[in-house]
Amino acid sequence: MTTRIFVPRDAAARAVGADRVTAALADEARRRGLDIEIVRTGSRGLFWLEPLIEVETPAGRIAFGPVTAGDVADLLADGLPIDAAHRLSLGRPEEIPFLARQTRITFARCGIVDPLSLADYRAHGGYRGLERALGLGPAATLDEVTKSGLRGRGGAGFPTGIKWKTVADTAADRKYIVCNADEGDSGTYADRMILEGDPFALIEGMTIAGFAVGAARGYVYIRSEYPDAVRTMGDALAIARVEGCLGADAAGSGRAFDIEVRVGAGAYVCGEETSLLESLEGKRGQVRAKPPLPAHRGLFGRPTVINNLLSLATVPAILADGAARYAALGTGRSRGTMPIQLAGNVRYGGLFEAAFGLTLGEIVDDIGGGTSSGRPARAVQVGGPLGAYFPRALFDTPFDYEAFAALDGLIGHGGVVVFDDSVDMARQARFALEFCAIESCGKCTPCRIGSIRGTETMDRIIAGERVDANLALIADLCQTLKFGSLCALGGFTPYPVMSAIKHFPEDFSPARLSAAAD
Image (cartoon, rainbow, N blue to C red; front, side, top):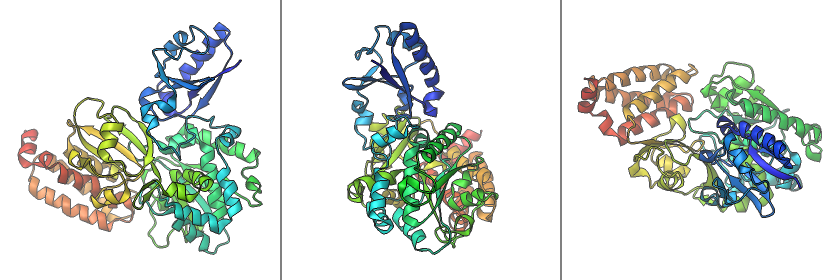
C-alpha cells in the first residue's frame, strides 16, 4: 500500500530545506524498499515548524517538524507508518494550537491540496462557488458579494461589492478584472502563499468576478521577487485552460474568460492601483490622478475591477457557502476573516486567519508567543512600512478597520511586525521617510521632494540638532504629505513617522538625542 507524504513547496519551506527533505525521503524510501508517494503542497503557515511534513495514516494526517534531511533516516528507521510518538511528531495538524484556533476560509485548502491538481481542488470544494454564481446570475452574484461585507484586503478596505457593481453598471465594449498581487509590504506573504499553495482559488474568484461584471479577460500582476509564485500560477492557468475552466466557454458557462500573468519590476508604488494599471499598459509605473476611478476608466481606458488577491481568492467560499455565513464573522463593518501575517521579532511567526475582532495584544502575546528574543515587546507595526507604530499601551485595540482608523492606524494587507524594547523609534521614523523617498514614483511634489527633505530633517533630529524646532518641521511636512500627495505612498508615510513621535516621545527627547550624538 502506497503511503502519501506531504512536503511543502512553498518558498518559505524551501528556503529552510524542504527540497532537501524531499530528496532525502525519496532516496531513503528507495533504499528501504518503502512504497511512498511524495505530494508537494503549499504551506500551512506555521513557519517556525518548517519544513513541516505530513504523513497519511488511516487515522488522518500526522505532522512532523521541523524536519531536516538528516532526520529522514531516523523517521523511516522502523518503516511505515512513522511512529506517531516520534520526537518530531506534532500529532494531527488541525490540533496544533496555532491552527486549531483559526477560522480558515481563504486559506482552507492551503497546505492540504496539491496546488497543481484540479481534481484535488475540486475534491476540497473548489468550483462550487462558480457553479452557484452561474445559477444565481450576475445581479444576484453581485448582491451576494455585497451582502457578505467583503472589503479590500490590500489597503483602503473599500467594499468589494460596491466596486464590482460600479463596473457592472458602466457601459463599455470591454471590461477587465485585475488582481493586485504586487505584495510589497514588509512582513506580508499571504498573496505568495495562495499563489504557490492554492492558485485555483484565485482563478475561480477572478472568473466569478468576470461573470458578475461582464468582463472576458483578467490579469494577475505579480511582483518579480516571487519567481516560484509566477511559475506555479502560470502552470495552474495552463491546466485550467486544458480542463476548460478558462477559454471561450469558461467552466461551461457559455461565456469567455481567460487570465494572463504579468510580472512587475520591483516598484513598491505599483501596489497602488493606478500605478499598477500604468505598468500593465507598458508605461512607467506612476500614479494617476483620480477621478476618473478605475471602475469607470481603468485598464486601457475601460471599466476595471482591481482587487487585492486575498479579496478575489475569498469570493469562491462566499458564493459556495452563502453571504450570510461569511458576514456572520467579524465585528462592526469589518466582516469575515483576515489572514494575519505575523513577522519580525516574534516567537511564532506565520499566517493566522481569524475573524476580525482579536485584540492586538492577543495576536502578539498569545498567538505570536511574544518576541523571539525574549525581551518585552515594545512596538508593533501593522499595515506594512506605511502603517502606524502602536505601543503596548494600545495592545487592547481590536484588529478591525474602524478601530485602527480611529487611532490613525492601518490594517492594510494584514502584516504585523513586532519589535522588542531594543528598537530605536527615531531611526524607524527616519526609515519610513527614506523608504518613501526611494520608492516614490516622482509624479507629485509632496512625495518626491517632501520625503527627501523629511529624511534630511530626521537626520538632524537624530544628530541632536535643534530637536524641538526640527520636530515641528517634521509635523508640518507630514501634514503636507498627508493631504497633498496623489496616492497612499506619500499620503500614508506620516502614519509611521507621527505615531513614532507621538507614542515614543522618549526616543525623540533633546537630552537623549544630544547625549547619543556625543
